[in-house]
Length: 327
Image (cartoon, rainbow, N blue to C red; front, side, top):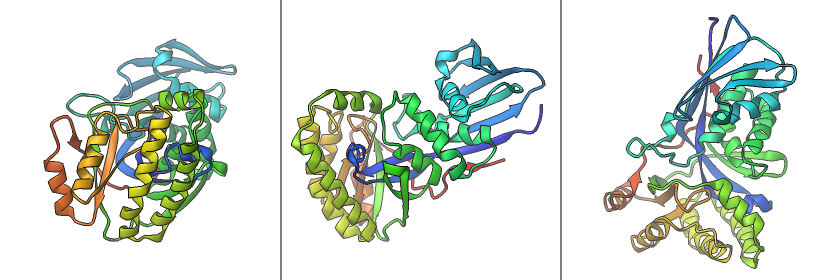
């Protein structure tokens, strides 16, 4: 077996602009230090073998041909490989040993996905591994293309951008435009897992199948304003801005029957307001994770200590590192 290439990429949490990013608004997104890992080694024959920890619990086997991948085992479990191979236009070639690892995206107690961008992170890591580089200009478009295929053609690409660049970013879907932002001095946060996984793809399909209401347009405006608060770097402006933003997001969710504040998010939102803190669901909502923000770490820790048993404070934080070759 030849030397391996090992690539990792971070997950993400969307801080504002969810859904509205599909309508041209900016999204603010932070990469977190939960990383997906892809390792590839070349074999001495034409067959490729796939093993995974976290992503799925099966072993796959395939052969790369001029007409694409010919699977011998577990094709349905490794759609990410099909998507990356097509995006990268990989034809006939030597076999590979492929190891995928997304265990850091799984709750250690329930073994459920916590919803912080594992599919985007593994797509970026695998794309970088097969291309043999971590240059975002080289792999960015390919990773976007592969992940959009995995998502059934929906999605803005913000999660891919976050896995590519790391850190705190402003993202616009048009042109996949990314602007790096510094984390505001004095602004603290904690991430909270609701204990219930949610499907972003299902919620986007529901939104696209329904009738658009005026609150969808208002959310676009609120997202523009919220992005301005984040770019100001003023933590007080950011916290104050979330009062209106979350009200707009709640109205949008109710009008379009998306349940963004379901599965405990509404309870946490109300509780945080009573403690003079800011809480919001992250991403598609209706489960997965949320974020509570404030100026005092002790107040945030007290909020965490008061959580009921179905909620859990996540041990993760902002990651400045995007996709990178580890070895």
